Image (tube, rainbow, N blue to C red; front, side, top):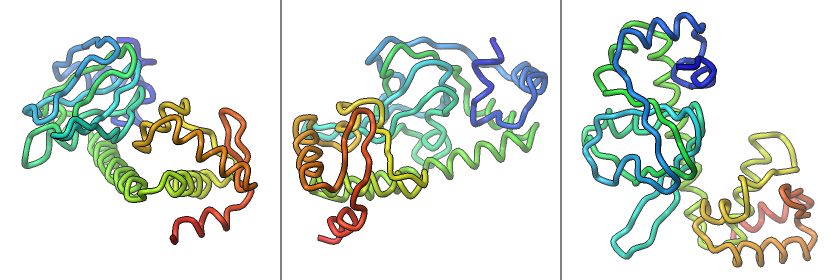
Length: 224
């Protein structure tokens, strides 16, 4: 395994290349490759495996009985997939996890992750931080989805990113289509609302950036 593929992994943050190799040598793992749109973990499937994304991207998608889907998160190289499900009392994956593009994942069994955490407390700390961060991001996601209007969702996202990154110039996530999916709205509807906000002088939109021109108005939109 090329150490470079794991150097940005949240689970192994702070470990040297030698420490990383030594840790991996004591537990079994395997590399799995997936094509675009292939299911990695299926909704309600028994959860016993945790993955580390080495290449590609993974969508976490919540299916509903009426056929609709909500995009919950997107995970990138270095991120873990499945940790909360594996260590939950339910032991089931709460969403479909599927490859957003050709993706390579290193898979571990639950007992082997536990072995690594017992051997090196830094791995335990990293794992705990990963779960805490995922929980925090999910709360942000739920807040975003709580707004019914598209303009409100745009306002919330822009203000949240502005506060987090301390800038009024916000880069859209990957593409308009992807951003629309994250906010659970259609791409044409998102385009219309962005154009309306720009016409009113509230934002300036020049792909791939949106500049906030009137933050006070965005905040007022969230109170309606």
